[in-house]
Image (cartoon, rainbow, N blue to C red; front, side, top):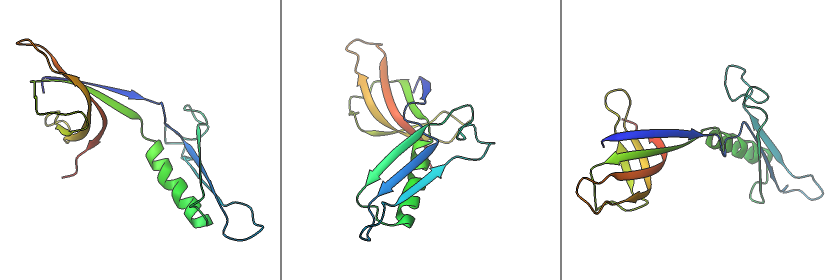
Length: 142
């Protein structure tokens, strides 16, 4: 890697998830689970500077209150993270395919991250830029 540029986006980021499902009992209302970021120390807290951004999710596979709450909690953990894209400049590698998982190391300042190569152009000239666009960087556990 020669250089890297990371961008964050709030697209698809939510601070509340409402899950509705079916109820296994006859003549009973559907089950519902809600997970909300409520800690005022969290910059994404519901009603804070980020606002009130709710993700609604419905599934006929959710049939109990416990399932609804667990699903809402799991989805909130997924949807609270900002979307990250990283553009890398690197030495050309013709073995790389779109969709490949690559390890990106920023040096001693941070743990290596795993990224999915989204797109890239292979230069046809000597010294051309090999730019790799990636998505979903995640720190690699050691």
